[in-house]
Every structure is written in structure tokens, then in C-alpha cells.
Image 1 (tube, helix red, strand yellow):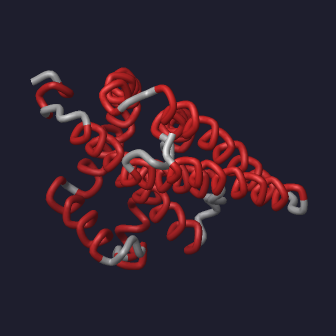
Image 2: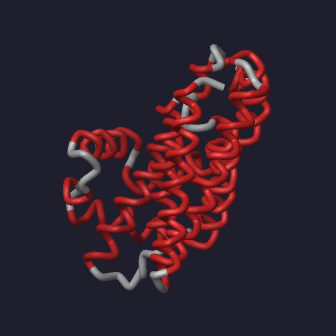
Length: 218
């Protein structure tokens, strides 16, 4: 294990300790968030040590392939459920334009017209129970992915994974009380998690050197 990896392991351990202390002195939502981050970074520290000592690049690729098969159905299920409802509500070209506009404005939900936010919010709220079940599964699988990769390995994938998990956590805190703020928050976190999840999937495919036909079976 190289000096860089040891340094990263030490840094993640210190960060984990900091999150644990933050959780100790916090309450409610922030306490849960700090504890979750503390356990995640501690897991990353252990994974970083184990993976860099025992696994080389090719072995890691072999280990990630089954995980890709695990993550793929959940991401596709979420993405397809979104697209089916969004295309029915907005139309395919209009929803594609909405996503582009949202991305070009750095994920600002105010870039969506009020009626677009209203429609998207209603779509999310009506499917909330099934949606939360899907994204809870996705969150657990992304935790596995983070533990397997470690911080010194493909940071772009890990960054997208953390972005997706953060959006999931934030979406679950939305009140869904039909206020303007709830609509803004729901739209933002929902779109963020879908974009990040898709990024994780496609970066994994690219990293493994696989073709789309290898993944989708056509």
C-alpha cells in the first residue's frame, strides 16, 4: 500500500471521527446524518486498506462486474419509472429539454417553469411510497459500491455515488405539504438523484471497458 493510500486512510479516519463527534453533539436529522456519514467514512477507511493491499486493478474490475449487475436493475427500474411517468406528463422531447435546462442551470429548480414544477412534484408525490422503496434499495447498493472502490479508485464514480446518496437523503426529508418550498426541494433532489445514479452506471460501464450491448443485452 503506497504512502498516498495510507494518507487517504488516515484522513478518512479523522473525518469519520469528526462526523462521530458532530453526531454526539447534534440531535434529530443532523445527528442521523452525521452518524451515517461517520459509519460510511469508517467503512471507506477499512475498504481502502483492504482493497489496496490485496487487490490489483484487474482483480478489482472482476469484483466490480457482479456489483454492476446488482446495481443495474435498481437504477434502470428507477430511471424507467421516471421516464414512463415523465413522458406521459410532459412528452419525451419536452422532458429531455427540461433536464437539459435544469443541468445547464447548475441544478437550480427555479429554472423549471412553475407549471413544470407543479407537474413534476405531483408525479413524485403520487408515487412516493414506491419511489422511496426503490431509492432505499439504491442507497444500500451505492454504499456497497463505495466500500468496494475506496477513495483512491475512480473518484468520479465515488463522487457521483455520494451525490446520489445525498440527494436520496434530502428527498426523504421533504415534507410534501404542497408548499412552494416543498415543490422546489422535491424537484431538485429527485432530478439530482436520477442524474447522479445514471452517471454512476455509465461511468462503471466505461471503466470496465464494456459496450452498451454487453450491459443491456442488445
